[in-house]
Image (cartoon, rainbow, N blue to C red):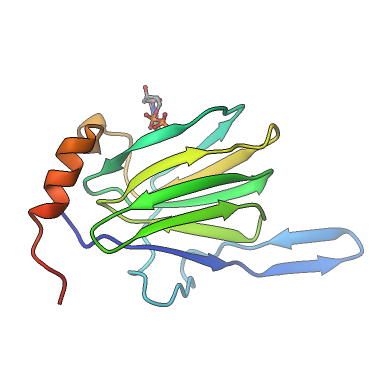
Length: 144
Ligand code: TYD
């Protein structure tokens, strides 16, 4: 399993009398301590969500989660940290690396999430069993 990382950064927005325009230039992301941007191979959208969803980790997949409309909370845990983020602005971008359990919850009724993913859909990349996930992060070597 690759190094687990999560991170959030703000994308630039251009404003003029026509409104706001948010840019996501994947070649120029500077997320501080986050690994290099990935080649986007899949884009998907979540809307009409209620309750909680997610409840899984990925073995290899990297994702950038954006919330162009509405808001939601994403709870994450990996071998580095536990983290909770409220996505509530189109300029935000949340990077979720491999080996990160995530739960998406508290969706506003209008919430739309757009997710950029590094790989095509592959069910075998999912870890859906929390016990298997906890075992997988315990078996990783300690971080330096
Ligand atoms: P899933 O990733 O399990 O969503 P969540 O964890 O948020 O509930 O996906 C839900 C369903 O959609 C599941 O049956 C797999 C399917 N799916 C695809 O077929 N292709 C995709 O790219 C994604 C993300 C999901």
